[in-house]
Amino acid sequence: MPSVVGLLDQRELVARRRVDELREEADRIQAELAVAERDWKEWAIARSRVGEVLAPAGETEHGHEQADRAAPSADGQAEEASSRPEAAKAKSQVPVWREGLAWSALSVDYQRMLKALADRVRLGQGPMTCQEMPALFGMDVVPARVEALRSKAKRLVARGWLAEPAPGRFTLARGVSGPGGGS
Image (cartoon, rainbow, N blue to C red; front, side, top):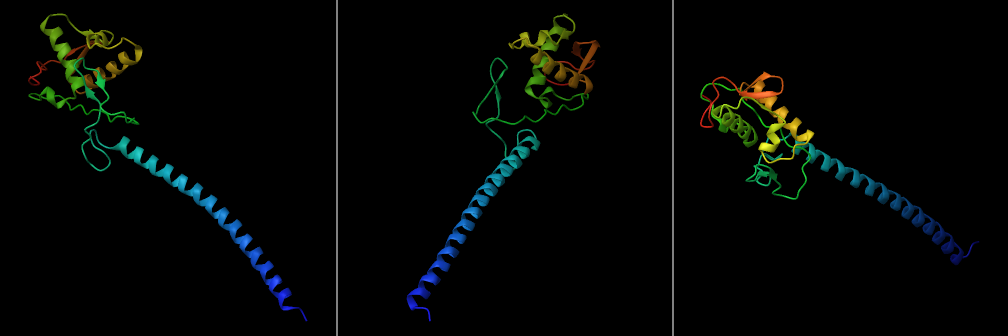
């Protein structure tokens, strides 16, 4: 018959093996949990960023106004009011021009383009090219700026604010005049 001490040693050995197995399983579960938490946080960040990108202009995913967006400076270039990076900016909405629609319906960048073209009409200088616009606005004349302004000008043409009498040359559309209104 086995001794009591021998039986206790046997049970202690079985218990120690079980504790070691459970510790290994707990370590494996902890490692899986850490990976799952990291993945979950990455998806939460991605969802938040998609919400910011898809939110209407000037609103967060919760519908609140964003006060720390880029604000135009005296020379017309955007200054970052916050050091927080943004994934993308929402497109500016350009309404279709109609008699009596004020320029204030447009974003500041579009208003600035219309003002420059209205000044040229007033001075009898004729249409303006997109290569002339960056220098007029105090920006570097680089292809990216020229193409960005060309895109804005084309959008204004499509909405009836500007006319393009010759390819790449823009002027105010018939009926569009000074900044006080659309007629």
